[in-house]
Each structure stands twice: as structure tokens, then as C-alpha cells.
Length: 136
Image 1: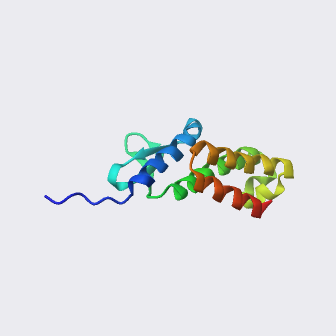
Image 2 (image 1 turned 135 degrees about the vertical axis):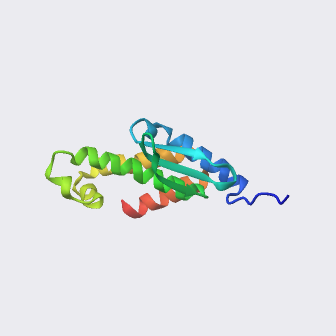
């Protein structure tokens, strides 16, 4: 019998687990779960609909992609909560963010760095710091 094919490296499996753990707090307010699918990578299951299961399943094979996706989930949830019941409700996420005071924008960017540090993955932290420096 042939060895099953692996779609994720051992290093990326470890790093994806670290990213999932860093963002564990978002599962408290988001309808999502990150699952280690072994040789198939990590899967984000979202929008549970009983008794049918999850409406969305997204596979990840590298930790940077998983980090970026979970960061976007967190940020968009924050922006939706801020815009709720205001004229900003009809705006897209980037426009809502631009409407925020610079101090609030910095809080969001600091939170991204917080998640990057929490993951403990140096390359993700370095990429995050570089991206934030370009934005600010």
C-alpha cells in the first residue's frame, strides 16, 4: 500500500497549530473552528447549520495564509460591530477603517502584532511588522 500523500509539511503543520492557538479567542465570538486535518493541512469550518453541518470549509497549507485569513476575520468582525447601526453600515471594510481615528487604527494594527507575537512564529511577526510599517 502506498504512503498517503501529504499536502502540508511537518513544519507548517506545527506553525498552523500555533496560529490556530493564537487566534483561539476569536472562536468565542465567531461561528468558526480551525481543525487539524492531518496530511490535508488545516481547515477553517464556518457558519454551522444544524443538522447539515458547516456551510464553508477552507483549507490551509501554510501558516502565513492561515494567519492572514484569521486576522481578516477578526478585523472585519470588529469593523462590523463598530459600523452596526450607523451610516457606515453600507461602507466596505477598508472605508470603515479609513473613517476610524488614527488612534483606533493603531489599536487594530497593534492587535495584529499581538496575534503575530502570540503565534511565536518569527517570520509571521516580521511580515506583520513590515506590513504595518508600510501602512502607518
